[in-house]
Length: 362
View 1 (cartoon, one colour):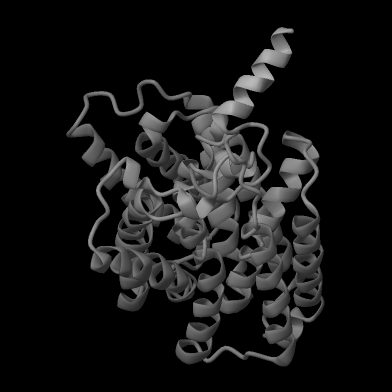
View 2 (tube, rainbow, N blue to C red):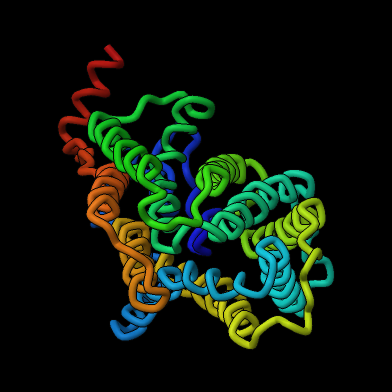
C-alpha cells in the first residue's frame, strides 16, 4: 500500500462527521457542505505561500516516490519474506519517528487513545500494507497499484453503508459503478497478466483495500490534529508487530536464511523506509498545508500510472489491452469520486439579511 495513506489521518480528522467525501484534505468538510469553493481555499491564510520550486519538488515527491513503492516492494520480497519485509520496514520507520518525537517530548504517546491507535495501525499498516506486500508475490506491481487505486471508491462505499449513512451524489455513484467495473474486469483477467497469480493474491489485495478504508474511517475517532505525527508513529509500530505475527503464523522463517538476503532487497527496504515512509510523508503534509485539496489528491490518479509504467520498464511486466481498459475505468471512477464541482454558497447581502431578520422577528 502506498505510504500516501500513512498520513491519511490529516485527510480526515478535521473533517465533519456529516461529510461523506473521504480521501481529501482538512478542507474537505467545508467543501462537502458547500460552504467554500475548493479552488479558493488554500493555506495561505495560515502560512506564507512557499516558492514554486518547493511546491514542485513536493509534488514530485508524492508522485514519483509513492508511484515507485510497488516496485520497491517487488525488489524487497525477492529474498525477504513478505510479512517480515513489511515488519522490518515499519519497525525501522516507526523507531526513527519515535526517536525524533522522544527528543521533543518525554512521553510521545501520551494523550493518544492507545487501543484505538493500535486498532487503526493493525487495519492500515498491518492489513492494508501487509496484505498488499504478501499479494505481490503473485500480482505484478502495476496491477497491485490499480487495485489500491480504488481506495477512494471503497472508502466512500463503506462510509455510506456503515458510518455517515449519507448517500453519495449522482456523480460519485457513477464513479463507484465505473470503478467497480474496472475492478471486476481486472479480477476476471488477472491470470492474463502473470501465471503466478492465484485467487488468494487477489483476495489478499481486496482485503487490504477494505482494511485500509475501514481504518481511514475509524481513525478520526482516535486522534486530534495536534497529535497526528505521534498517532502515525504508533500506527506504524502496531502494524509492524502485526506483520511480524503474520509472518510467524505463516512460518515465513522456513527456508529464510538472513545471510542470503541480497543487497538489492536491503536497498529496497531502506528506500521504502527513508523515502516511502519518511520523505514522501513530509512532502504530503507540506502540500496539504499550502496547496488546494484537489491538486494534492491527484496523487491517487498519478501513482497507479507510474507504477504500471515502472513495472513494465524495470520488472518487464506485461501491460495487456485488458490492463489498459481496466486502468482507464478505475482511474475514471476515482476521478469522478474525488473531483466534483461543488456549489458555492454566496453570503446574503446585508440588506437581505436584515430583511430576513425583520421578518423573523415579526
